[in-house]
Length: 88
Image 1 (tube, rainbow, N blue to C red):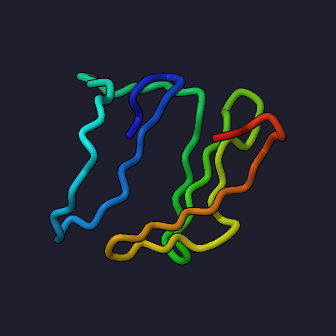
Image 2: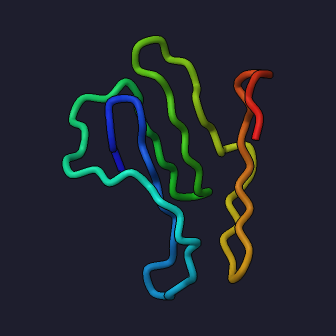
Image 3: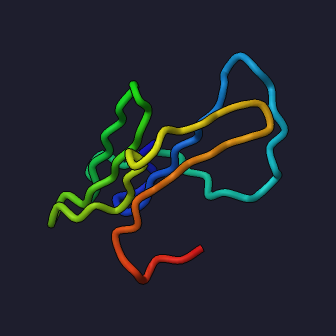
């Protein structure tokens, strides 16, 4: 999950069901970062992910605004925008 000191990658999937994945190139990380500038908090019920910057406590990502819906052929993930400068 911890790829570099500044980047993490999380894959949400059902380990009991095989699914098609778009063949996009992703960076290969041989060793995981031990010291990062972010902290990840995962809540199981209801499922949410929060990422904060360790150095100043800034919230970078927060999905606790609405529940994750993970169903066959459908994924809904809501996040709270922490800045008006975020797009995509």
